[in-house]
Amino acid sequence: ADRVRETDDARRTNLDRDLFRWVVTHRVEELDAFFVALTRLGYGGAIWIVLGLGAALALRRPAILPLTAVTVWSADLLALGIKAAIGRPRPFVVLPEPAPLIVGVIGNSFPSGHAATSFAGAALLVRYLPGRWPVLFLLAAGIAFSRVYVGVHYPADVIGGAILGLLTAIALPPLATALLRLRPGP
Image (tube, rainbow, N blue to C red; front, side, top):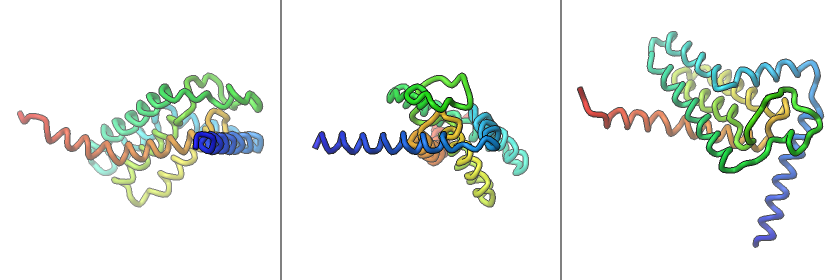
């Protein structure tokens, strides 16, 4: 049973590595700046906070902004904790060629914080902007994919981050509402 599990783990790792290698060796130079820009949009979930502010103003529902910020930053903190626990090295540490398109990336690889914050932000904002779901999730997927394209995450890191972000956006708002109900009145 242990040998079968090891073989399955090795097969998944090889597939992940092979998909990563295929993406980064098939980059299109004309698209490099676009994917670097998408990656930069995702830093710290900032784009989602800005979109949350826009939704709060447009819908005249100020609570959208703090809820977006808490959801996005919670997903980011959870991703950081999981990264520390799992300790998966970034692809460019294991596979130095081709070089990543961005420098200064630190920390471990799994899960992708960009994917976690992006899918958390998109899933939360869809509650308030249901007609915008294609645009929100396309942006989230683009930011997540950009992490593989620029060479700093494996595909499994992005998938794991996306799942983490979706779960955070599903669980956090009801939890926050329940906690607010528990607080003592004035």
